[in-house]
Image 1 (cartoon, rainbow, N blue to C red):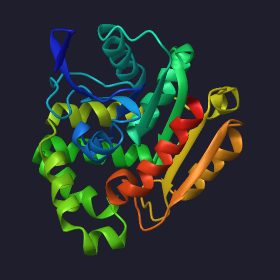
Image 2: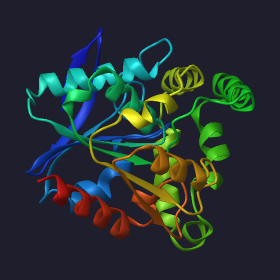
Image 3: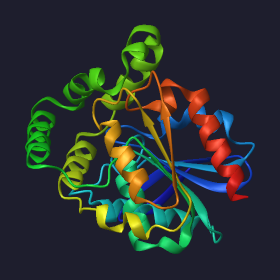
Image 4: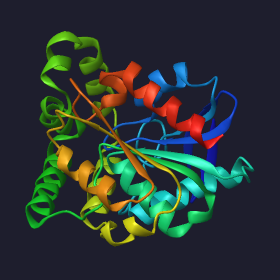
Length: 264
């Protein structure tokens, strides 16, 4: 399904019944990463998975994809779907940055929040320099080099050695991301504000899920968020890296299911 915005469009999928649950993927991925959740959680939630601009099948808009802009896109989708009740927003990695931006802009829409494999702080100087390198690589060599560089860092050793189908699927998703989507997301993440100062002000229930083998965002970032958000609960998933919803879907889905039950 599509919504039309800014001379382009965003694609999304809806499935299930229950409390609305918006699923926001990371960079440079798509709503395809939420298939294990769409398949297994549709009995307890009305799941909405979106392809952020430039990712998946959404239009490759030009310019910087600021986190506030991506959050505004999500709000436009919710408005288009005429969802008036408070919802749960689940963001993974960059999707977590978007979730925090969405909370800054529209805290009243939140029934609950799920932060997966993400952090509240901005890029360090080294992180910003790495974004610039990735921007150059994407411009010169396309999405495949980004996929190849990221792939070994996304997964736990267990996933890499025992779940080749997950690794192959994820590489395919990344390699199909538009170059403009990659550039826009990299610039937007590089420029994202510090959300750390708002953590103590979050007053909806928050579930933090993090893989113990995450190479991109250390587990200590999740532990720090858990300490700072008074309404939060942290679930650590073993044998999982940056994509616990794909690597250990049974454990991930159970954590989400348990969280949704306390919100009803």
